Structures are given as C-alpha cells and as structure tokens.
Image (cartoon, rainbow, N blue to C red; front, side, top):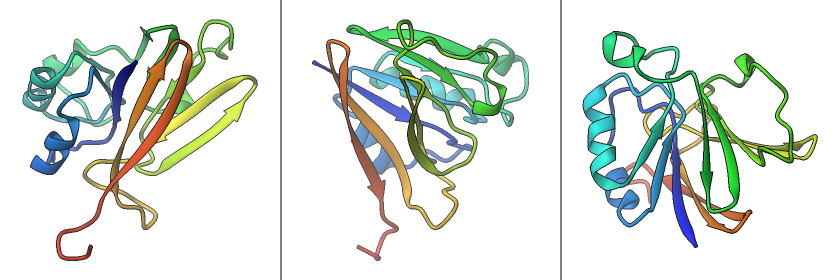
Length: 157
C-alpha cells in the first residue's frame, strides 16, 4: 500500500503543521499555484513530487512545470492538472482512473464517465467557508481510499 498526499493552491504559504502531516507519505502530488520553487524543493525533501503549473506560477522555474502530468501509483493511473476547465481531452477510464485538480480552493469530488475527479482544496487560502486542507490517498493496486485532512485555525479547535 502507498500513501499519496494531494495538495493544491499553496500560494507561498506552507505551514509547519502541513509539513508535519506530510511526513511518512510515499508520494506528493501538487495541483499547482505554488508560487515559490523553494516550496517545491521543500516538498521533495519529504517524498517524491509531481507538480503541475498553476495560473499563478510564473517565471523561468515555472516554465519547467508541465500543465498536465500523468503518473502511476501501484496500478492506479492519475492525471494532474491545475484548472479542470483546461483539460485537453476526455479521460479514458481504462487508462486514467483519477483526475486531480485545483484552482477553485475548494474540496470537490465527483464521479463522471467512469473517472473519479478530486480537488483537494487549498492548504493556504481556502474558499467557500472550507478549512485549509489536503487529501491523503491510500492506494492498494488500482483501488484507493481518501482521507480528508482539515487544518482548523489555531485557537478554534
């Protein structure tokens, strides 16, 4: 079994408590809007990282990031993109079982045409009254379970 952390919309703010929660994962996936290459380097110290470029990622460092990334964890095939509205093709459920995206700063999940779509929300600037959050996938073969990890504001629980 592999544990995969899904994060998005960091926007230059990666709190220590988020880094602590990532300890022990086998892989990290970032669905864009990091805004700082040093944060990507910090994530890579924790676990292997796949990151895509978001609309707020600019400069020579960001030019190196793909707009879309395909990866395989055990037998699960994932597609990562920042803005789902810019997906350039309809995923074939025989080739891609999970699409991870960001951009909206809101946790979202749905199943469409045999493919599971998941936005882990934002770890720094959530919207819609949601908490700062990320998702941990536990992958075994081609099956996965998700754990939603919310970070309540200090002093509020």
